[in-house]
Length: 268
Length: 251
Image (cartoon, rainbow over all chains, first blue to last red; front, side, top):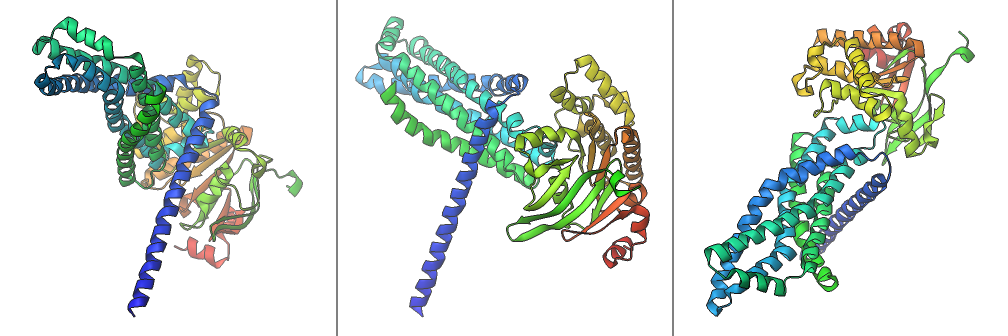
C-alpha cells in the first residue's frame, strides 16, 4: 500500500516536473522566435523614423528627470558612505575614484536599467497589451502592416539608443553629486580629489557601463514588447502582462549584469 | 445569368481547418458573389471568425484552397498576403480605432502608410470620407474615447474605405448597439455597398443578427459547427426548410 503510494507520488512528481520543463522550453522558444521576428522586420523597409523619434523622446527625454534625481542622490549618498568608511583609515581622498568607478561600471547601467524597466518596460507592455485586447493590433495586421515592425521595432531601437545616453547622464550627475559632497561639504582638497580620480579612472570603465546599458536597453524593451504581444483577455491580462514585463525586466538586468561584468572586465 | 457570367470574389474549395484534434471548419465549399452583400450567419462558435481570418490570410487552411479575387491565398508568401490585404477593408466589432489618434488620424492612417498623397490631398480625402459616413467637422479632432459607439463605427467604416477596397469585411457590425444605431449601421453598409457597386465591391458580413441580415444581405451562408449548411439568396433563405435554419430564424 505504502509502496504504491510512493510509486504514484514519484510518477506525479516526474509528470509535474516534465510539464514545467516543457512549458518553459515552449515559452523560451516563443520568446526566441519573437526576437527573430524583431530582427527580420527591423531590417525591412519601411523604416519608421517618426515612430522611432517618438519613442526616443518617451524613453529618453521623459526619463531624464527621474534619472537626474536618482543619479544625483546616488552619487551623494555613495560618496558620503565611502567617506565614513575610508576616513577611518585616512583614505578619504579616494572618494572620487571609488564613486566614479562604481558608478560607471555598475550603478549607472543597473540603476538606469531598473528605472527604465519600471517606467518604460511597463508602459510598452501596457500600450501593446491594450492594443491587443481592443483589436487595434488586428486592425494593423488587416491593413497589411506587421505589428511587430510597427510597434515592436521602434520601441526596441529607441530603448537601445536611449539607455546608453541616460547611463552617460547618470555617470556625469552622480560624479557631480560625489564632488559636491566630497569637496564642498566634507572639504577634501579639490586638486587631490581630481588627481586620484585621474589616477584610477579609465575610459574603458565608462565604455563598460555604456555597453551594459545598451544590452539592458535591448532586454528591457524586448521583454516589455513581448509581454504586450502575449496579452490575452481584458484588463486583467494587460495588468498581468505589465507586471511580468517589469518583474522580468528588472530580474534580467540584475542577472545579465553579472555575466556581462565577467565578460567585459576581461575585454575592456 | 449563366454560371459562366457570374463572377465570384471569394471561393472556398473544401476548406478544412483543424486546431489540434478539433476541426473548426469542415470541408467548407461555397462561393461569394462579386459586388454583392453576403452574410455568414451562425451561432456562436460555429466558425464564423475563423472563416473571416482565412479570407484575410491570417489563418491558412489545413486542407483545401481559398481563392480571393482570383488569387490562391494558400500559395502566397506572408509578404504577398500583406500586400494583398490592401484589397480589404475591415470593420471590427468594436471599431478597433487607434486610441492615440483622433478620428481624422485614424482615417488618414492607411492613406499615409500606403499612398503617395500629400498632406493636403490626404486632408481632403479624409474629410470626404468622414462626411460620407455622416460625421460632422466637430468630431474630426476627437479621440475614440470621446466618441459614442455609433460614431466609432462610422470612423471605423471611413478608415476601412480609405484605400477603396475591393472586399469589405464586417465582423459583427451591430453587436452591442441600440436598435436605432443598429439601423444606422445597416444603412451605412447598404450605402457603402451601393457606392462600391461602380468598382464591384464585395461585402462580407459576419453576424448572428437575424433581422439585420435579412434586411441588408443579397446572399446568406449559414454556418453550423464548421459546415456551411445553406448558402442561398436572402429570399430563398427565408423559405428554407432546413431544420437548423428554421430553428435559428424562429428564435
